[in-house]
Length: 256
Image (cartoon, rainbow, N blue to C red):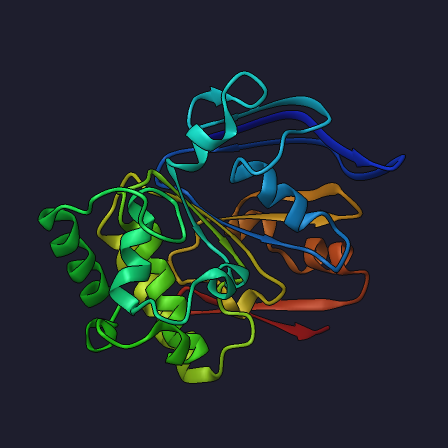
């Protein structure tokens, strides 16, 4: 799904991401964490085909960035990011927002066929948002919008799902409803790969299988959760003593 070899991103003479080697296989679910300024957002922008690296090679869905038009790759990647919610128009309903996922637009630019509409309704049901179908998207809560955007990202049956702090700012019920919907989506799609950037490990779904820790643009650890998220590696990443706890697949971090 993703293969980085020596990937670096530089802006204005500053290295934001440096010499990252990383591979994501089908069916793997990665959490990406690190302190502010670690390079998480930049990594995600490369993964979601929003930018090319300055150095190294980045292959996403079998296509080399720099040799493939980015818009073609973006159409094959499901993206969930809170900032996207602010781009929709006040008159758009929840079902309208989900349907824009068919072509990765903000307003439908092509005729939407009946099977696509039915699929959008099924995804709203899967994410626990059926009752919101006819509600104006702008009137929905942050948690409701997050689940609607997840349904939108799943509409094209993308093989790669990229999530940028999807639970940021949500209250406890909103977070748990979103993570439950994400776990259901993962369980029903064995070949799906996901990459979730977070500031808080508590906001990762229980289905998370792997973790990538970044600090100052460099990889501190990468691999299966039980290997990458040890107390020692997490402490090295954030620069203070930390202890990671696991309960039913969910993660929590405490001061060491």
